[in-house]
Amino acid sequence: MHFPFCRRKCTYCALHSRAGSTVAARAAYVAGLAKELSRLDIQSHSLSTVYFGGGSPALCDPTPLLEALQPLLAPECEFTVELHPLDVNRGTLASLKAHGVNRISMGVQSLDDGTLRHMGRGYSADEAEQSFSLVKEYFDNAGIDLIVGYPGDPCDVAKMDRLSHWGLRHCSVYSLILEDRSILAKQATRLTFPDDDEVLDKIKLVSRFLRSMGLNRYEISNYAVPGVECRHNLAVWRGEDYIGLGEGAHGRRGLTRTESGKPETVSPEEDEKERRIFRLRTIEGIDTTGHTEWIAPLDAFASKGLLVKDGPIYRLTERGTEVCDSILAELV
Image 1 (tube, helix red, strand yellow):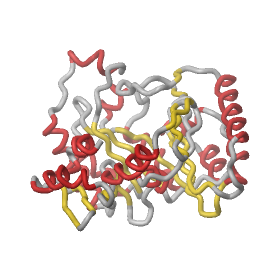
Image 2: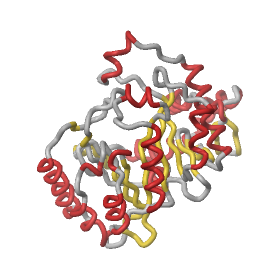
Image 3: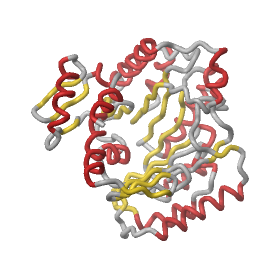
C-alpha cells in the first residue's frame, strides 16, 4: 500500500508524492484505500505479508485501514510500516503494534548531518538514532535505509560505527540515482558527485561493516540478521503474486499487472519469465531450467567472475552484484 504524503520533497526523490497536503485530504485517501480493499476478493486470514510504503505513511491516521486489514491477516503475517524519523513517537508505535504491525523500516538515508540537511530530511543523525532507539522499544524486527553516493556524504567507517549499538535487524543500502525530475538534478552543476568506482568502494565498505554486525546480504541492496529477511520483498523477487493499492503502487496477480490502479495483461510466456528472472537479485540465484537461451550469456558472465554456476542455477558474485542490471538486460 502506497502512501504518497510527505512533509516536503527530498532533494534526491522523483517518486510520486504529495507534499503539504491537508489532514482532510489524507483522511480521504485512507478511506479510499479501505474502500478499495473491501472490494477485493481476499479470503479471511490469507495475507502473508503487508507493506505500508511512502512517502510517510504515519502522516496519515491509518486506523480505518488497519482495522479493515485485521481479519485478513494470516496468523504469522509479516506487517511492515515505513517510518520517517520525525514520525516516531510512543502513540504511533503503540497503535501500530496493537493493530498487528510487527516490522518497522525507518528511512535514515545518511549518518552525516550536513548531508541530511542538504537532502531536506529535517533531522540530525543524533535525532535519527533517538527515533530508532524508541522504535526498538516496541519492535525488535526493525531496520533502516541508507543512500550511498550522495555528494559530500563521507559514508566512512567513523560514521558507520555509530550503528554498531542500534540493534539493527535489517538494512537496505541504495546507491544514489540522479533522477531527472528531482531537485538534486537541478543543482547538479553546482555539486561534485562521486564517480562509479567511489560509490562501489563505499558500498563495499558498508557491506563489510554490516557483515561485521551479523547482517548478511540476501539481495543486492538488502542485508538482514539470518531469519528476519524481509519476507514481503523476497516474495516479490521470487515471483509471487501481490496486490498494489494506492497512487504509486504496483501489483501482480496472475497475468494481470497494475500500476497506479491501471491494469495490463501480459502473455503466459512473459509472465513466467518475469517471475523467474529477478531471482538473480537474491542469494538464491536464477534457475535456467526451461530457458536454454539464457545459458550462453550467463556462462559468458560466469567466465568473467560475475556469476557462479551450480548446475542450472547461477548466482551473483560480489563483483556481479555491481552489474546485475546489465546481466538482467541480456536475459530480457
